[in-house]
Length: 143
Ligand code: NI
Image (tube, rainbow, N blue to C red; front, side, top):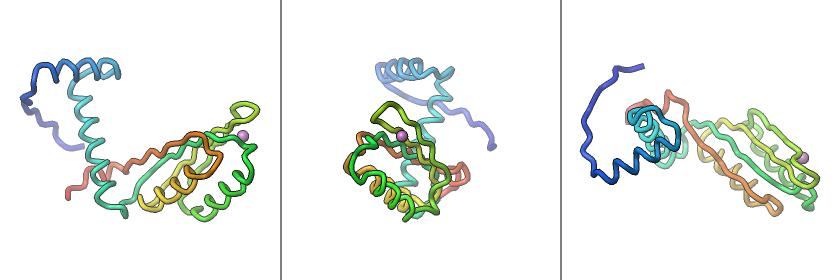
């Protein structure tokens, strides 16, 4: 871990009040910890957007109706096409119709996004979202 640096920030009063409300709602103990998380998130998003070949980690969450025709076969086909990316799959039978699936992923950004888009666009997927992040060794690497 590198040295901690203190620095001053000039900010409008109403913006700071809104920031304090936001971080209190999110449970942060200090402004500094909340700011560090905001900076990390911005750096992650920038590196992901600027380099689709960046090695990344992800989780894809899908909610779907397992009665939808051909859906399970299509989901399996796509996952087999990208099998090198898939670390683990958790499947929950939520109720009579719905399934929740969480797929843990590791690979380059472009391939993870291609897999996620392939699954999310299938007919029968009711809702879903891809979370992408980077290993800390990549986040902290200078440009
Ligand atoms: Ni199920």
